[in-house]
Amino acid sequence: HLWTSGGVDKNKLLVHNLQKYGVIKSKKVAEVMEAIDRGLFVPPGNDPYFDSPMPIGYNATISAPHMHATCLELLQEHLQPGMHALDVGS
Image 1: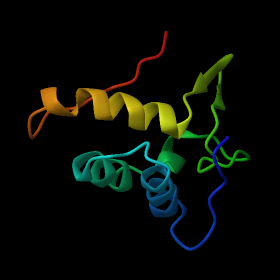
Image 2 (image 1 turned 120 degrees about the vertical axis):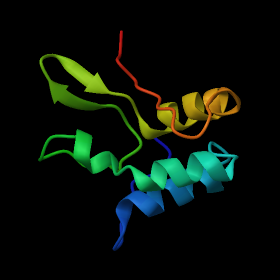
Image 3 (image 1 turned 90 degrees about the vertical axis):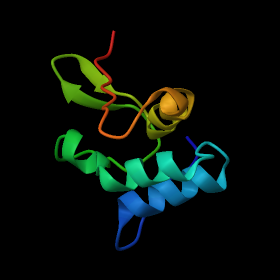
């Protein structure tokens, strides 16, 4: 785990830390990850801003934020404005 976030805007701080540690390299990925709050996808009782996979029910997890950032960095050159990326798991 790289860190746990705290402060007024935890999602923004999470993205800042991912940039600080070199996981997020591009402005575009940072903007997208700031715009979509991870807290919307993690059930209550878990800290969505902790850099770790989180249980989401049904014996499944949401990937750690650094994994989503890494995947978006790899995809960013292939995505055009208006396109979406969806992590459906495996």
